[in-house]
Image 1 (cartoon, rainbow, N blue to C red):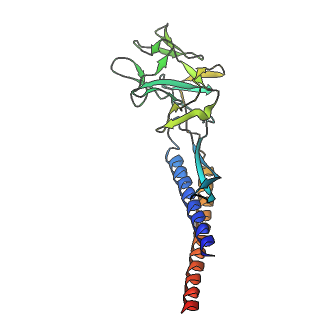
Image 2 (image 1 turned 180 degrees about the horizontal axis):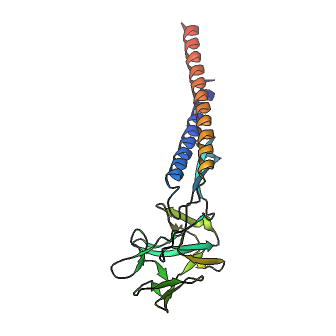
Image 3 (image 1 turned 90 degrees about the vertical axis):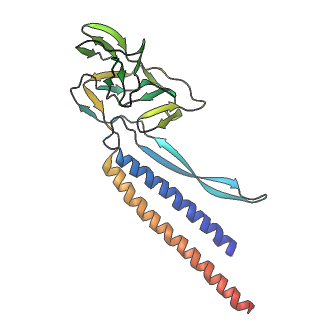
Length: 243
């Protein structure tokens, strides 16, 4: 009886920890509701059989973070260096850790004229980093960068056969996970100059999930408390029988 209750206690605590992780994820999504190019995250729960001792197997809880790559709403800014990808694909940026991918197109230029992200990482085009030296900047629907009437580069927009192979790095950057297939040039997209893709977080949905999760967590707390009380009663009764 005590052993079964102990396993029930472990299952309850593992469930509460999983719910706590999901609550943290919802809080992070809500904190980034106004972050340009942010992609919401979700946590999936599933059960897995694993070995706890030499001959004992039991079911445990497993977690996996999934990133929703649905396109966020567009916001018109009028800034010529703000760029939106309407459709599939990611911008390529060069970081000290290697090439990374993003949907956040709120770019600017550094002291050398390079087009860079808000973190200062160069944005890559077909001819390497994109350098803007001039006054009037026009960006075509296929990513052509035209400065004062002359094309100087073109955004390299890449897509992936399996988007789940991308791992989030920070709030808006992605890296290719181990074993993932490299990106290929995207086709189904249109570049929109002077607009930005906003976060794809739906505040109403996240708040509803948070409320449901709080209720589930409280219910699980009661289950753990009930198991603890049963264990206490069992110990007391065994003590009386042996006295």
